[in-house]
Image 1 (spheres, rainbow, N blue to C red):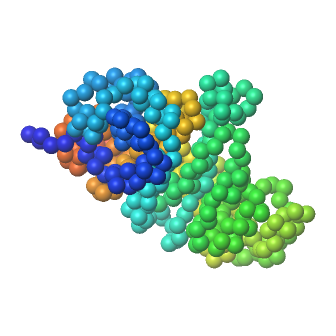
Image 2 (cartoon, rainbow, N blue to C red; image 1 turned 30 degrees about the vertical axis):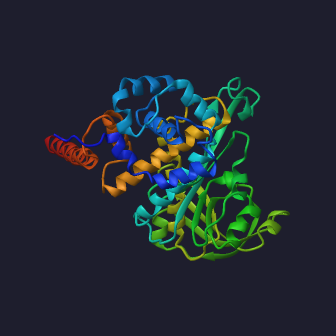
Image 3 (cartoon, rainbow, N blue to C red; image 1 turned 60 degrees about the horizontal axis):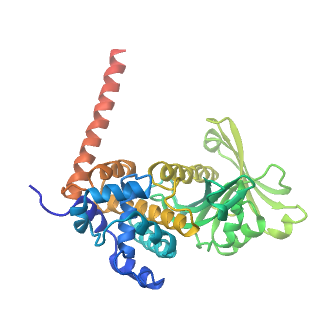
Length: 396
């Protein structure tokens, strides 16, 4: 019988404690703290994320019910809802933002060799935002409209591994395009964006930084075609309708973006829609540009995933600091699970790992054994489904 560490403790072994304490030290997180440290706060909030707790009261009840195991979980202080609430309210959220960024730096190299099915060695990012609605009377600091509040989660997602590399939390009124002013473009990387980010002055800065962008054009864009590139029969069969070199001729746009652009017209038979893409890359095949934009939907799936499986829609505190603390800890838990998935070489989805962990955190099963068994069972279940489907097809 295994008498080692709790599953929760094994999960938390993957966090770099030296880095965490450095983040705490940077912002004096433990200043005048006698018992409930920043690490205790993080572990309690991470537990709430992993077990899908809906409130601080639920978190307190669950942890107190297992009070004899708290020390073995790494929690050195007693659990009180008011203490945890106050910690979320007053301890600088940047501690957990910096720590999440440190985990991201660990995770990205683990997924650097992920195959996207594209013949590109470049780093590919998808930029988008998601709005989290809040109650105006409870969160007046996050004013969005006259009748509601909201926060916006602006995210730059590395499509190899779906790891968020840049996150900015703003109020709901902040326009998406303003995030391009904060972003530091990486030379040689592709940035995939929707029409909400179409600002030629900002796009020209990306071009001048040596990076590439792929973005949808607006219907009223004014331009002049300079050259039409030949489109092969194979490209036409995959939806590419034209590939042009253009220059902008609008009163302001021709000054904002004085260089040539590439315009690709693409027809998607699944949605029966035609798209016009703009890019500053002239060497990649037109079909690849269309495929790159299609991959942008992964950032939409990322937002949907974290809203469904992490606690960022209902908040444990009402202050700006508490909300940002909870979001950053949720992001760090997501990245931590992604790191564990790669380190243990698991084939199962992150969702499956989270579901398993949510039910086994107080067990004393070796983590690799717990998840490997689930990995094998997952493969067998998938095979059984395929065999059943095959049998039904034969029978039919």
